[in-house]
Image (tube, rainbow, N blue to C red; front, side):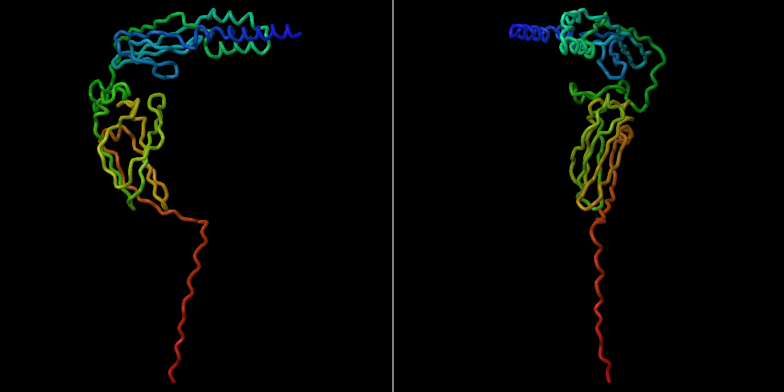
Length: 281
């Protein structure tokens, strides 16, 4: 009896090692390269998430099939289909499928993680053809429309070198100023938590060094300014980043409103003191 139990444990351990082999041996991602003519094309997946700028070598999640889109200013975009084929490493799971609660779950893992597939091609190439000229906003500097703010090259874009005047005041003064980024394109520009600036009045010149920001997508990004002060209601205003860039200013005046405590009992009216005077006889 104990011998049978021992062999069962050994088989289970072997199953744990060799099951899910596609995930272990191949991994969930596959190394591929993207290139284009001309180079400098932006590559995005089918969800619109940017992968890289050509030429590049990256690791991408394995899938049964997907497609990638190349785009560059002044050129027609193009898409390439990435077809996945069966990954033979999944066959290592078959001997252990008969073991309850071990073999089958790991096969499921291989398929759910994408490890059961591999792309037939490791190299994706796109020849971009000149098409309808890109209608660039005349207020944007040439070549700067899609230059993105990144951590790798801080200060390299004209957008980061554009000086913006920040100016906020309030009545009463001494309000705490908080700001955050609100983006309708979170795949490109992330929303941020509130950051404390200082108290009113506040005036400073600074730039928009927001990661992922470009002149083009700045229309879809806003800056939220919130003022707080004890005993007063919070006041919030939002400013479109593109409009702030064009005006080279972001600012406003906040009229604070006192809080009303409805739970506090109303003050009792004071009794009038009546002084009676004696009539002269």
